[in-house]
Length: 225
Image (cartoon, rainbow, N blue to C red; front, top):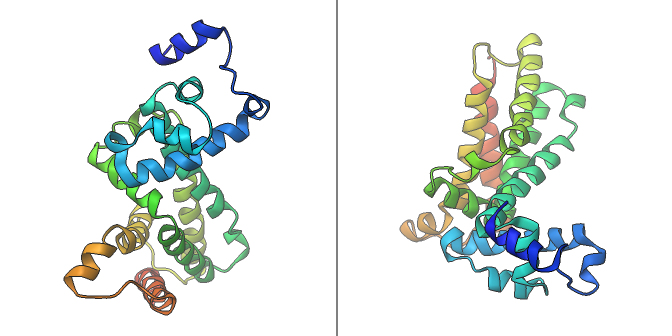
């Protein structure tokens, strides 16, 4: 058992008492994760402070350590929850009910919009890349959480090839990487890109144009004709 958790459990025998908050442990954990996503996204693992997360969630460091074990444990949980949410939203797209090209367009547009609306997610993934994915590697859930992303593309790509819409011999993992790269860059490099080329922050209309361009780029890459 993690030393931080061990000391908390030994001091009280059960979960630390935090008033009415203990009546809803899942709600408390969800609240902690939501605030921690912002904290780690803004400051990374090294800069994030458990004190600030505790204050923003009206809980305590003791409670956070009880649920997550350590600062690193909370950071790993944030990574897991970030990917879990994205994959769940992907699963809700019901792509199997669409023709292959329409399904591909919907998936690419979703990925682009998701990343654009979740800058803390992008920044946390960037931070984990700085750590060379060492905390992801410790997660027992990460691989299983992300397998559906490839399965989804494999299924719609296979349907497209069988119907003659998509060209054969593409690697679904490579397709996934291309979609991710185009959507990710739009957020990860937005500030440096805008500064270098003296662009103003993207307007909704510009966002739509860029998203449509990315969607079209991926669709044309897969098309058989």
